[in-house]
Image 1 (cartoon, rainbow, N blue to C red):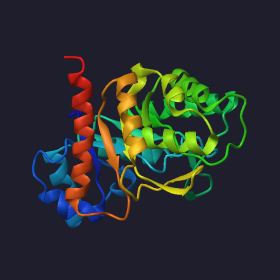
Image 2: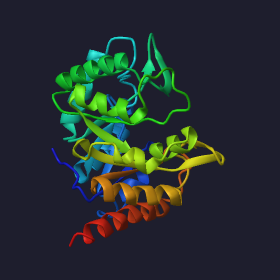
Image 3: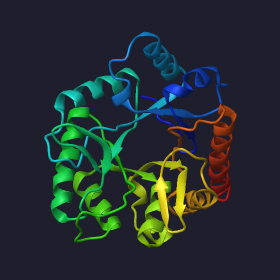
Length: 277
């Protein structure tokens, strides 16, 4: 398995970007990330393009439909197919959302979990089961949310409890921290300081929509904003440099604009590493 270096900047692999990614210079980005849910069983020209890219670049995977917090049993067959996909493409890092998205069928939305001890036990058991079937340690991502169904603890305590009980890693989405902090009125840096550095496997960063001054919508459809870049720099200072992925899901600009954001990630990483030289 090829694992991205700690100081590395990646880009989300989207079908709309396939042609541009295939033609990109070798060092334009350090790794790509795809959702296996969208690629398992895909053949033909698209499958060949994915295989070619995964031969040239390290590939990480970020799931969309496992529904780790959901009420229905985990889809064991889907997990087995995911394991084969990860093995085929030599994927070192697989992550999923700390949320739920299905019951009798897919809801096509990442829904928030109650911040309760009961939910911690439920989700942690499902993460352990997923890790057993996948044959590898996984990371869970802190989700953006706009309401909390129930809570007997705060978000940071909930995330820490899940990580400890499941013995898994954290994919820390810096933009989600920023969005949640604005929407729910807490200090983003104080929240980050409560997370366990030793469990952070990688970072995500993305753009969001400013609905109002106190309402931000996590869209992945815009450039990363200045306050989020600063929060990423602060995160590196608190927890260290890790592989960092730029997420963009729609409103794709020309590839050079995305690569300029990749360059910004690299600048922040090198600045942090250089401060320790």
